[in-house]
Image (cartoon, rainbow, N blue to C red):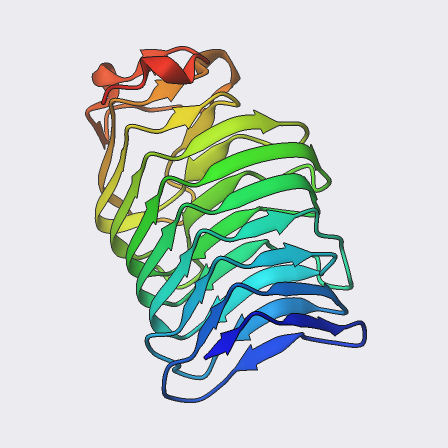
Amino acid sequence: VISGLAISNPNGDCVRVQGTGSVTIRDSKIGPCGRAAVMITGGAAGTVMEHNTIIDAGMGAYVVGASNVTIRRNVFNTLRRIGEKYAHATEITRVDGGLIEGNEYLGSFPNDVLSGYESSNVQYLNNLFDISQLDEPTGAAFTMGDSTTGNPGRNNYVAGNVVRRQVGGVPAGVFGSSGNTVLEKNCFTAGIQAYNYSGVFNGVTVRDNAINMANSFVPDTGPINGWSTNINSTNCSLVPK
């Protein structure tokens, strides 16, 4: 357990969790960091990152190839580009099982803020995005279902998230699914994107959300279950309970 610390490393990653086993990182201030605030790789299972404040880093939580990871109730406040083009506040790549819940993403970010890439069995719940500037023209508050292998992930659930503000970039989106990908009861004031970008787009449900339709890109609603239940609004109080 790493708890109650102030951790910085201007020359590289601040915290690395590698190999098997679980680590809990909580109640700490992490940053400045010369690369990632927290990097979780190498098959680590059951790692928990909670109640931390992340500032002044190139990436926030960078999770690759791990399983059953929990990232909850952290504040990611203004990250900056350090070398990597694809630098995210929370990156979930090839992860099996996870909970991303109750985090706040505030300030400016270089690219996609929350990225779910080729991951399955992950819940994205009740996260808040208030983005004053998104530098990358193709960046978004969150993305999921991107893939270069034809396996964009399945059994992912996205609910209760609020994109309160997003200046710059493009709308949040779902770009692929191997099955059972559900987005419901979210508020997308900056619109959404939903289309088959990765080559596989099966079992996608987008229902009961408040969406800024004028700022959205959904070229074909046919493959999307529940589309007619969404509300065209930027008023998050109208999201069905």
